Image (cartoon, rainbow, N blue to C red):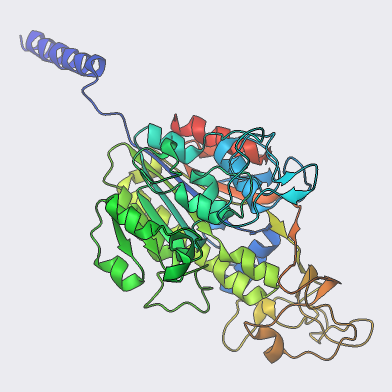
Length: 471
């Protein structure tokens, strides 16, 4: 006799559910996209960083991601890309020329008739006509969808990688003009950003201040003041950042140019990349529609250009720690990462190599240089020698500033120093080791991660992220 009542109750529950679904009273699930970019973090750099941090048998967080692909990075006009078109390809799905930031494929970074760069100073913009058009970025799509947005970098926030998320310019060197595009309601603001990026953390203060205030701007604008007037809280150091509320819009510029290498960082003045990542997530998580966050380990690239391998490996580990922090925090916010996609990759390779048949070194410690040390053979456990009878390091570079005419005896103490520049096969000017053209690693976890596999073009990454998150 009770069955009819049960059936009636079940029918009522089903009807209410159907009405609710049809009426749209239930909010759609949030869409969280976290994109991690290790600038210049080729696979050899990743391997060396793993050995440096945890030894040959250990794992970085990047190593544990369940889905893996390899990414082709060539630009529209070069076999070896620079950061601008490579990051822009991830953010827009468009293959563009070197130096170009988030513009159409027909955009030139230089005048084809004179081969002169269009941008002659940080204040210069592209020609007003006849040189390409802006193309939409993932961050702009996220803003249109109502998501909270954040951009973090240990480089200048106006540098090529972060700029490719929010700015459009024919040449990456126009960093004052790039900064203009960030300021809501200001001259040069990128209106596709709506009310502005919600969280901006990194270096590059000089591009927000006029020269009269120790900046690099040739006009009189103070963009920090303008950002404050647009509703942003502002921090110039870690202490100030920690004191600010975790609600509302946030701007943190912690150095005039790039932030310090992780080995050199003052923990009281500059937050770590993990600190900035954790803070950005806390700041953005209040948006019920979700978030888009880009995190760049920018100084990996700079250390590799210097051929200071120890700095590069430490910054790679710092980048990996930030990724770990993000995964742990997002699993609390979104258990099982059912509505969260986290992708980590690099924009290009470098010429770093691991030489010879080295014995296992284990991780680097204060008393063990590990992968940073001289090469000891796996058979005889003796220092390996070159044709001239001199020892050499495990890590070397295809090109770089330390190309000695006559090699001399090296010591582990000398090569373990953080300022040591590894030897290179081809001599270059100081700090001008080049990018490499090899494919790079991509790892993914969360919603839609299973779609990343095989060997893919960097433009495909944009399409897969957009498809997974429906923006």
